[in-house]
Image (cartoon, rainbow, N blue to C red; front, side):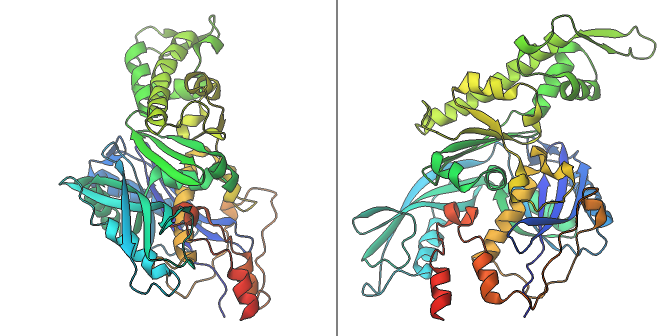
Length: 457
């Protein structure tokens, strides 16, 4: 028996960087990172692939870096993140009258209900990316998280449907395929980031995940264990850099460096007597830039982004302290100083930074626990959720690939995997994370009685 798990690869095609991470779950359900590569991204603007050739080059560079970190890796299929302001979401309702009313509701009927939603009318030029059930009804019973095993005549559900522009989707798929890879699935970036930084209790308390990337700010709102809203805001880290460049009359590289090193999201917290010296261009005198002015520019743009977040929360009626879990900030832009204070001030909700290390096995390199890699790690978790719920076909033979030294922190002990014979299949089933995050909101099919079944077998 081969009890090993498949290696799943996440590909995050961002506006500023492209990242490839390969991971596999260990026996404790934590992700071990087997390969990691990144490259600067040039062909992407506001989360959309505009220059396919540049994007292919960047994906290939990131892949080469990933193979350099672990030459034993074999990468064919990837889970790819999608964002961009062409992304829209809508709420729909679907019902089916059952054929065999004397039998219990099965997974097949739920799949049928979800498949029917793919026929929903959407504007020409758009394409459905994902259909996510929110809560089910069976006859007169409302708010059922998982109707499998119930009996009834009519089964229905409310759905959250995510759509995107056909050409934008085509450009992503083309870039991936021309890089020698196959897209296993396209995943909305805020949903991937959410799975990486959020726990079960966050979902029940109600949270808004705000992923501030380079080209877009992605938003996912959860309430009472259900995905309530998703949105892509077309402003993010790169807009701040451009504002600094224009406002202070510096080069883009200098603007980026100043933002990262000296930037603050609250002008009141910046020292009024501190200055940054920028060398002059081609013999021109050096420039003195006030740290306070820099913070004013950052605060103006960040406040605008947070106003959009508040607007979206109001649209779904979840402002006014309804979200007990508050706001979780993630993505590269979340590392700005004093951003938590600004977020709390603008939205009136408590805020914290979300790190993707909750799902990572110990001993990985520190860089991977940064909020920058939340989306990429979330894509791997999405792949595992598909694998654990038999949603997509996975190859059954898995190669044994060790975590390479380059991806381990110095001084950390190597995590030794148990002998394959030593762990029985039954034990492996028990250890699986039965309430997988993605299963909770993707199709709410939680296998709570799996252990009971195992006992009766």
